[in-house]
Length: 111
Image 1 (spheres, one colour):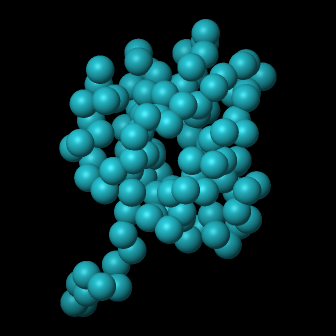
Image 2 (cartoon, rainbow, N blue to C red):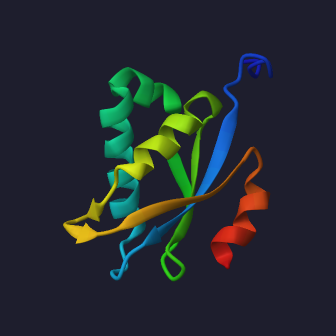
């Protein structure tokens, strides 16, 4: 098979975030909470189109990077505003930076 043309490929954005909490949530808990909030905000069709993934999460600094389609990055940031709990523990998700390249974001996450 031939690879997809660059014009047909979905463009992506990387969103760096920080979970401000007293507890230490793991990657799955954080990703599931963010994903469920995006699903509630956009609906199942748009959630599927957003192609949300979390390639990097540092449990020590509680910072991570979310990968999302560029048309859905603003909806992702808006959905993180509504997050106030992870597993019934209070939390605030703070968006640090948005970029189109992951290596720019790694310095923020690793501290």
